[in-house]
Length: 263
Image (cartoon, rainbow, N blue to C red; front, top):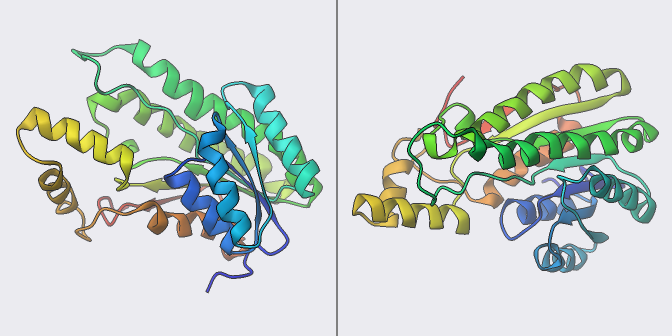
């Protein structure tokens, strides 16, 4: 159903690994896009490059720490040089506090890395891509945010705050870049079932004397759809914003959380 939606286009995806980054990259490739993948370790993006190639699309991986604006610019410029253009930018790279460390109250030091990566890193990469998006007459920037923006918890307060800031920045960018036909939107997943969440569930369930599966069932039951989404189920929302299906939508956030929040 989505084949050809991104035919002839090139997408950049940051924070590529075995979870959301991989799912997004493959979803965009199946829709016809060639992809440039950024991550700090080749072991993260290397297997995904091979999977994209197996779909018949071109893919390159570039070692990128988006906290360094020069590395973000290298990702953008390399994508344009090697793949010919840039049409879509997906800011998927993220950082959160270490929830395993002792926490006994408000501690702004815990907020520094999430803000450095989730706000300044995403904005720097977006800025580096804007000239390439302008060169092709417009395009789409997609920010991956989080349910935590609406349902923050103390252990991840810096993560939630950084993603809220990114949502506001996306709305400002939508107005600033709109005249260049560059759209800026956000996808806000809820709990994403995968390795990271499973580790978190294991840690929380140990504190509470329950099991990870019981905790997952408890959280899923709070959703209108009693389910925890997988990366593959969230990636199509990114494709929607990346494609012309959303050509008159900008400055918006799409909650993809099985109905955990509404409105």
